Amino acid sequence: MGPGLITACADNDAGGIATYSTAGAHYGYSLLWMLFAITFSLALCQEMCARMGAVTGKGLSDLIREEFGIRWTFFAMAVLLVANVGVTIADFAGIAASLEIFGITRYVSVPVAALVIWLVIIKGSYRMMEYIFFVFGAFQLCYVVAGSLAPVHWGLALRSLVIPSFRMDPGYLMIAIAMIGTTITPWMQFYLQASIVDKGITAKLYKYEKADVLFGAFVTDFIAFFIIVTCAATLFSHGVRVESAQDAALALAPISSRFASALFAIGLFGASILTASIVPLSTAYAVSEAFGFESGVSKKFSEAPVFFGLFTFMILVGVAAVLWPGLSLIKVMVLSQTVNGILLPVVLIFILLLVNRPEVMGKQVNGRIYNLVSWATAAGIILLTILLLVTTLFPVMRG
Image (cartoon, rainbow, N blue to C red; front, side):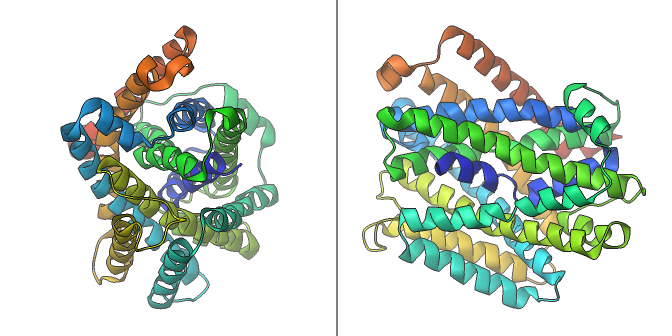
């Protein structure tokens, strides 16, 4: 266990928690069916990347360079770098917001958190890093506890999981699309495959890694389920609207309890720390693999200077942006979501083309039924991503 579960848990970052909180606060239980469907799409995408990593022993960007050439690789890496900078900034903002609820200023919390993250990656081994990531991933269980304390209508919640509902409301449509965009992201595919290679998982061990990936997809959306139902049972019932994960945590105090509010804040802190570690790592892995530089957290700085240099650069940019007076973090998050939307269809097509090449995968290519489901899933995600981009780039179309 490790790469699949950690990658999936890191997917519930500050932006993801904000999206799920908004879905519950604004639309109650009605979007739970979308979460149920997304779980299968997430598992499908992650399984293909995990299989490629185990069979080939190479990362995704490494395979893209070998099979499609340097130009496509450079395009993918340039856009990934821009998108991941935005996500990293958003997660350091999540660290700041979560601890400000407890009265700790961002000018203390963000530099300290960044230093700890940097030391763990630079000085630690892959195994130590994995254990620490598991600890911060476990912080998300706070949302399960918060949900058990809320007056949830469990019958309605469970029915909403399996009975689709739809509203021709621009806001509803935007949240539905955002739920897909925040659950299946480009950086996840690069990080998962690279971490499988770094951990040394081979085709012989893949059956265990497959279980890890599928379990991870279930766990991350299990947590998301409790975020949605908690906000639906409290904020939606009282007509409270939120725009961020911090808003949701603060709004819970007068409606539910200060304990539930604290749990939401602790969950946000753990999730933000986890993703603020993993997204810079994902960037370092992807770019180093793409251009043939040494990579791996178990190596020394002198053995992989580009890898650790990129990781350090991402951390510094995230910290500087959050501490920069007057910078609009909301605009940064919107920009990162837009760029992720541009890259996701490209990455999905690369994955599907690579996983179906016998010269790459041998006998481990997709079967016909698997391919049918995979391409249908990719087509659906691409269609919704295009819709997200149109509504993001042309706001007038939302009204």
